[in-house]
Image (cartoon, rainbow, N blue to C red; front, side, top):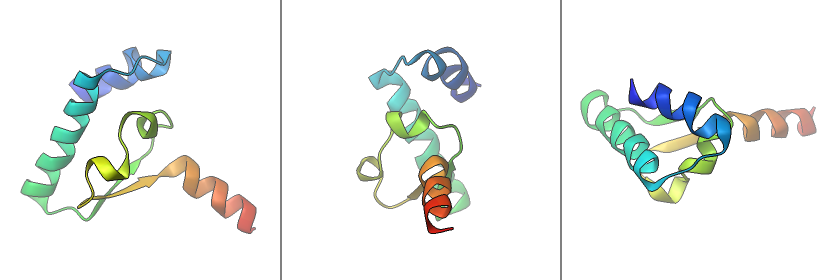
Length: 75
């Protein structure tokens, strides 16, 4: 799948392209349209470099790195 390819062959090597960003946004929008998702977990740390909350404001983006960091600080 293209998303896996982007993660493994681009983001892992700090390659960020507009095409990859649009792919992630289209996949997220498709999930929202088809599955009526409320949010999505950005489980790979570099995904948050690719897409931001303001790119798709109607779907909550949960950055796992940020959440874990905040929980560690709170603890």
